[in-house]
Length: 250
Image (cartoon, rainbow, N blue to C red):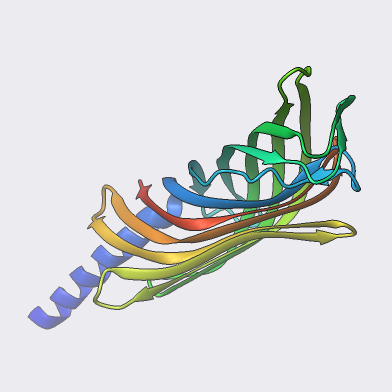
């Protein structure tokens, strides 16, 4: 009889914990990302140059809200900044925002690109061992790129626009270790646009209780921006490198 009562109590406790987690869930996360930047950009498809963009530490953060309501998607809002500088000696002349920069001249750039992702997704599968999410993202770009050369007026390209992308996420728990492996990505390939943003890594459950969960993350992230005319921005850029971060689940 005592065994039956104990089993019933444990079952009730587990059920309460699961229900508390599935009723409402708020996730807040962020990461520091050491990027290596490479590629070309310009204000037309055949008028791009490689400006030897500097490797920089970048930051990103997100907030996600999950609920148990059927048919209504969960929502995640994430923001990433890709800010860097570069300088190059042109191998051929280029035109940029009404200015002509001659070959063999030294041109500097300040590259500021920020995008905010608005993602609607469904949990296809979700338990302590495996989680799988699918959805769609609207990636909202906000870009300012400036070229400068001594003796010339600076040229600035301000570009913005929303690009739809597919979203996928999976997390696999490693039993009795506190570790998980995960992968997350946004993808688009339409016409001359090819964009992806994926990350893979491991997380460790630093705190795990009914009030709050805290995970530490470490992994690798890569972004490709092959863009053909987003508000006059043309690019073939790659940002990639390792990241470290944390996720808090209330």
